Image (cartoon, rainbow, N blue to C red; front, side):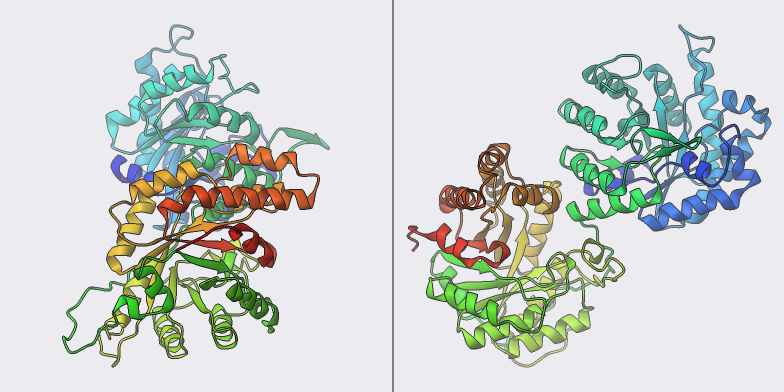
Length: 615
C-alpha cells in the first residue's frame, strides 16, 4: 500500500488497529524478562494466536510483534545477529493471519539510547538503526510502518526519514504523554503538535502510558491545531498489582464509550496499547460501526439501459398522495412509528389513526431499526393503510435480503398498495440484540435506488420486462451531521443520480449544522424532509449524542435539559419547546418534517405541531 492509497482509506473511514501485544503474551505465561520479539522464531504459534484473536475481534490492522526488535534492544539479549530474522518472521506471521482481508503494520519502538546532543548516537546512526529494522519488515510484507511510544521528537523524525529513504510505505508517528497531557519531556499540546507536524508522517498521534480519559483531553486540544490525521491508542487504564501480576482493569465498555468520543473529536485512527485485549477491540469495533457503519458489499453492477418507448412511466405526481402534495408545493408532515415486538399491531394502528385525525400526511415505518427484531415493517404498513386509510412510508433496508429477495418483496409491496419507499442501507446486525446474526448487503442504498428506478421503468434487475411498471415514490436518507461530510454528500449525489426523488434527514438539533448542510446541497433540487426528535430527558439527549450516528445536541440545549433534569414532566416540556424552536428555525429551508414519537408517545408530536400553520 502506498501513501496515497492509505490517505484515501483514512479519508473515508475510521481505521481500527489491534490492542496490546506484550500484555497478551504476558497473560499467556511469557515472563517480562524474556525477549517478546524473539517469540516470532521460538514460539510463532503463540504470536499467531494473538494476531488471530485481534483479527476476529474486528481490527482493520494488526501490528507485528517487533516493537523492541532493533539493534540496541536486541543486543541486551545477545540477539542482535538475529535482527533480520526476528523482524522478517514477525512480518510474515502477521501477513499470514491478515491475508488480504486486513492490513499489517510493522511495529517499531524507540531505540532506548539517546541521540545527540544528549546521548552518544548521531542522527545518521539513529536513522541507520531504524533502516536496519524496517527493511526486513518490508521484505516480510507489511503495508505500513507504525512508530510507537516515542519520547523524543528528534528520534521520531529520524525514524520517519528512515522509511522515506527506502520505501513509499505510509507511516504513523506516535509519541507518549503524561498524566497532564503533556509529553514526557514536558512539552505542551501545541508544542507537541508543532513537533509532530515537523516530522512529516502520514498520521501523527499518541499511545501508551495513560488511559483514554487523558488522551481525550489531549485530542480535544490537538484537533484544533492541525489538519493532519490523528491516531489515538490508549492503555486500558492504569495497571493494578493483583497477587503479584500487573492487571489492567478498564472494561471493554469503557473503552468503547471513549472510542465514540475520540471519533466525535476528530480522531482518524484508533487502537489500544498495554492492557487492551481482543474484547476491548471488539467493543471498540462496535462503537465505530455505530457511528460510521462500514459495510462489506459485493459489487453488483446495475447499469442504466434504454427503456422501450411503449412503456408508460408513472408520472411523479401520480405515484402517491405524498408525491402529489410535494409536487404541488404543500408542506408535508410525517410521524415515525416503530413496529411492535410481537404479533399484535393494535396499539400502533390506534396511534396512526390519532395522527391521521390530527392532520399527519404519512406514517413512517422503520425496518428493523438498530438491528432489532420486530414485526416486519411491510406488514405494519399494510395494516395501517388498510385499517386507517393514511399513507405509509416503508423503510426498505439492504441488510436482510439479497437482490433477488429485494425485488420480490418490492413487487409484492407494490401489489399490496404501498407506494412510498425509503431506501436505507441498514444498521449492521452486530449493533443490535443479535450480535451473531449475519448481514447480506448485496447492495447499499444507492444500489437499491437503482433497483427501484428499474422497476419504475418496467424492468427487473436483469433488464427483463416486468409488464406494467411500478410507480414507487423513492426517498433516501441523509445525515446533516455526518462525521465525514464530503463522503456523505458524494453518496447523496449518487443516490439522486440513481433516481431518488426526496430526502429525509436524521434528527436535527443543531440549526447551524443544518444550515451548513442545506447550503452544500443547493444544487440538489429535491424536496427536503427534516427529521425532528422531541427530547424527553437529559439521558435521552445523551443517548442521541452518543448512540445515534451524526446527531449532535449542542451544549446550550444540554444545559437547558440539565436545569430541568429532576422533573420528568419539566424535561418533556423542555424537549417539546426545543423541538418547536428547531422546527420554526428550519421552516424556510424544508418541504416537510418527520417527527419521531419517543417511546411511542404520539402526544409529543401533537404538542410540537400545535399552533403551526402549514400550506
